[in-house]
Image 1 (cartoon, rainbow, N blue to C red):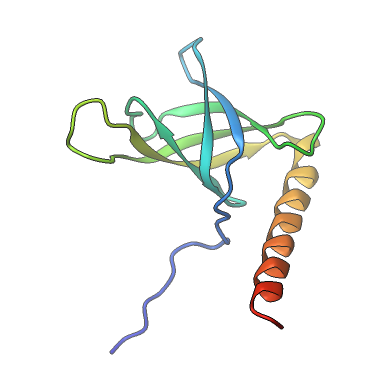
Image 2: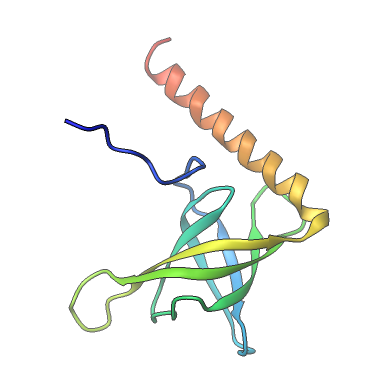
Length: 127
């Protein structure tokens, strides 16, 4: 039996973060929440599909930061959650660029969230 290899390089955090985004060549601002997030991308739910490769500008609104984290991404997959009419899509977005003045803040925030999650797990397991 061969071991299963994990393709992801970074831990995904199952936390809701409010985001606002504009898809390239569109002036329509949309808002949603993350289903999960990592240092390299995020997953959201959308009422409409997004084409693979679609570029977007994203602002992540973390509750404990005074200003949103500004970055860019592209859609790497889009999957309908069910065949029923009106059912939303799960969208996988890969970060392509994080604004220079946001990089350290964003990475530190993710590290803090990972540390907090590890502490919570360790405390609940009685260690």
